[in-house]
Image 1 (cartoon, rainbow, N blue to C red):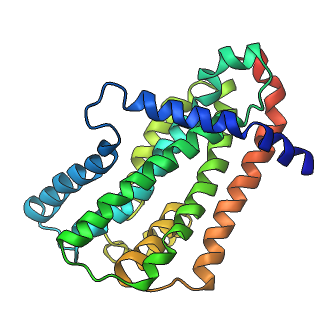
Image 2: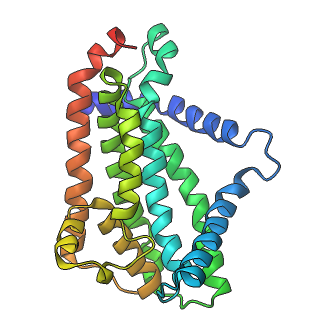
Image 3: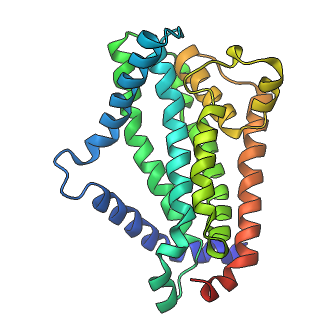
Length: 258
């Protein structure tokens, strides 16, 4: 373990450079640049709120904030894992030329998405100011569910990156899964709207727990108990350990398939 930590620290500057590069590339030639990280969730919130409140007449208290707190975490997981999935393939030229710990690439994509999400948090603050939401002291704990989600995304991203090297169809299948995952996560509806059996299914969805945790802190001013924290920890570190194991077992064969 000590050796792995030393290796990671040795390449942390490369990690920082890659994140900085991705930020520059994403907003290159854009007039507003990083402001789009704030505008995108706000504009999507306006569209979704109009459709669900006006057209479909689905009534959820404080729907704009309810939607934002759910979509922010889901979009982070979606972007992070989708980018991690292709990270090894897209970095093939560099991997073939020089030695770099291969896990750097999926981890970097996940951290880049995390940084992007942190900027998007400003959209949540703006909505809270506009709608005059109550500010609870529990807002100080907002990093907790975000870190849970980050750890989960790294683990899941490592798994996807590993499998995609050998089975390129995974990328196409994953896009379908993300669509299903959107509807399996309470972003635009409440769990109370679901039948009993589907509520039980929801319990095995990690994003449900992260989103609920984040909403409890931001919207309702409550601190989730030990049960919620242990569940989040189990999903996060369970996937992280599984991801590290899968990646370690397969990484030596990457060079033969990229």
